Image 1 (cartoon, rainbow, N blue to C red):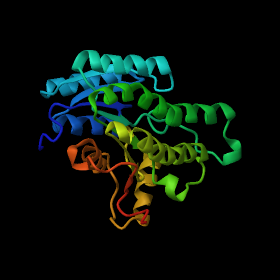
Image 2: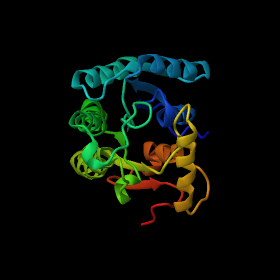
Image 3: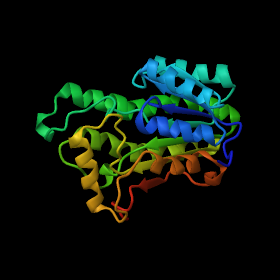
Image 4: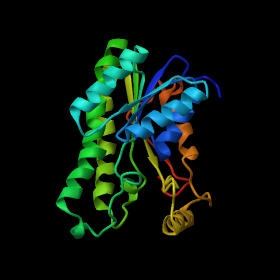
Length: 255
């Protein structure tokens, strides 16, 4: 890799599994020191240990992004251990590792709707609130939010998930306007249907394969297909880009 992030400190929420783990691994390979902020503490510590064993600097911190005290403690741990926070990847979400139901809009329980918004949307807000003071003090920062291609074109039988990811689009633009004066960039990546499940069953594999039919690039999307966009938004290459959403889906949603 090119060490584009040498000396930088990057937090990846939900970094203990799937796509989040891929983000953390690639950011580390580019020279960043990594904080794995993950509700699954065992996974957070395991991924951090893997990175350290590979010669990188990393810590794992149990983090519930839906809890303000938890994210505040996570940010404090990052500063205590590494001295700064340069990058936040707001990846934690209810989707695969923490599964959601795939039900018609009027069959989703109120509890599940509220939990989806609490993690996917409020969690992004709380994590951003936790890191911005340190980024302001530094006069520099990158916040990278994760939306979804489904927010741009809709997707049946998961309206709560799609709604939460659509909210991320507006959140990104608004936060970019608010913190631009502090030299903090806020951007968004919208993945397509990605084979991110660690132990996918036949139905999941079939669903991911079916997604190829809507793409210009006719293959299954993997987590590694997304890491380049994350590194771009985390690096100095995007220092004059903010409030933007980059769709990474192989040409399914063309706009």
